[in-house]
Structures are given as structure tokens and as C-alpha cells.
Length: 173
Image (cartoon, rainbow, N blue to C red; front, side):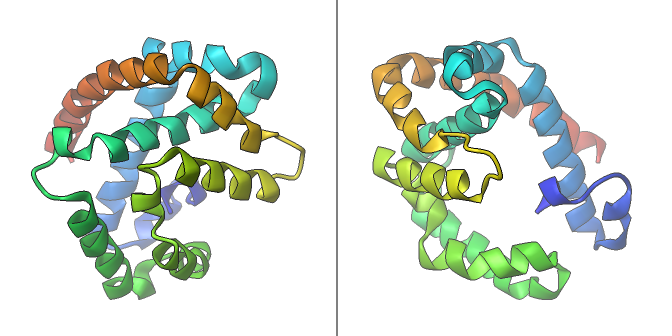
């Protein structure tokens, strides 16, 4: 939801959502400038140009979901159900776009589907279909398979640093 809220327009949301939007922005800024993330995007740039960052973001989501137990004591399925329930409980605070997307996200269990390459392939295909220009993102699973261990290693190193950065940011909110 935070990606669709620009400038200071987040100040109309409840305080907890405002904090989430600020944290999301801080994570995006950190990620986009991080040398490891940029290294991952360079591997894709020749074929996907400015879509490389979006694709690597999805690849990193895959590695987070796949390795969830490394980062959380709570099972991914339990976390996901709690997250979906939170969306339902706060429906009136969501943007219209998020409200429209929410049933599809829940019905297809996006967050759990990220654990598999097949799930990532479906997500990239859906995103590719929504792009105005032909991004060919649906084809990026080939690079994920080819450079799987490299992407996973990069994610692991990057995510450790992101945890530290995010925890620091949370303390300032």
C-alpha cells in the first residue's frame, strides 16, 4: 500500500499506518542504494533494464519466504494468516487499490506462494501483464534458476544489514 502513497499524503492515515509507511520508505531507500542489491540488479539489467530492481525485489521476497524460519520463530503460514486478518480488520484504513487487491492476495495466498519458484513465476507473470510496456518480467525466472545460489547469497548478506537498519529506524519512529 505504501508504494501508492506519495509525498505527505500518508498523514491522513492512523498513526500506526503512518509509521509503517515511513518504515517502508526507509527500507526502499536503503535497498535501492545498497551495493549488494545493486549487484543483484546488474545481473538482470541487460535483459530487463529499469525493471531489474522490481524483479530482484521479488526474488528477495522469495528467499525471505523460503528461509523464513531463519528470521522468525513464527511459522510463515501463521504470520501470513495474522497479516491477512489485520488487513481485514483495518479494511476501512486501506487505500482503494489495496482494498481491490486484498481478496486476490488472500485467495491466492501470495505471501506463502513466494516460497516456490513456481509461485514467483506466477507473480512475475501477473506483474508483467499489468505493465504498460512489455517488461518481459515473466521470463526472469530463467535467471533466478541459473543464478539461484548467487541471488540467495546476496539476499542473505543484504537482509542481515536490512534487519539492523530497520530496527534502528523503528526506534526513531
